[in-house]
Image 1: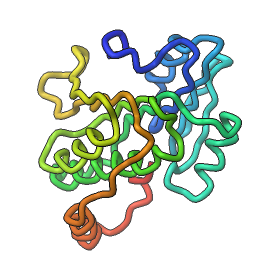
Image 2: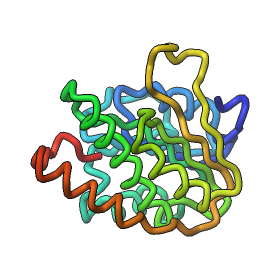
Image 3: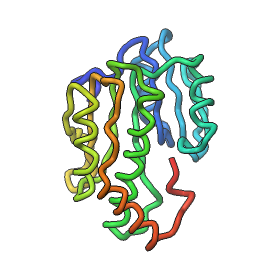
Image 4: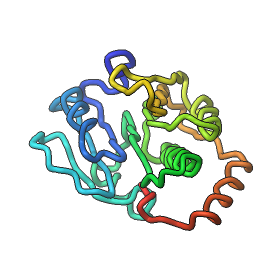
Length: 198
């Protein structure tokens, strides 16, 4: 995907949210080189990489201190690219798993004005389904270019796609009221689960 879209470039500063077990970290570190930096963020521990341009943060990206820790990791700057390769703890109930995964993407999107540089890019893994339609319009209005990609390495039967958005305009449109109502409906039926945090 990066060969096609070049959302990560030499010298880029990259946030990899949901970085465990570390596949994107390896790729990103090679591309950005010594002049760039990659910050890997996950609730789960990640095996340390030997590369000096990688910093690992074990944290919940939705927690109050997360933005402060991200600021410190790049000296109060902003990222050139935000990767979000996220999945909730899967229940096996497709409708619920799909909704929760898209909800994680929405939460990352809400953070972008604070952490992504104008002109920057994001790549989000998404489970295809009815709730994906609530996410795509927000990406389209926030970025100059938007495409849906399914890499050759992804299994054909998999519901996973990658949402590639480039040319961030610095703003993210608010969520629609029906999205909020749907969120409350799922919370009432499933209860909160800390394992679904970022």
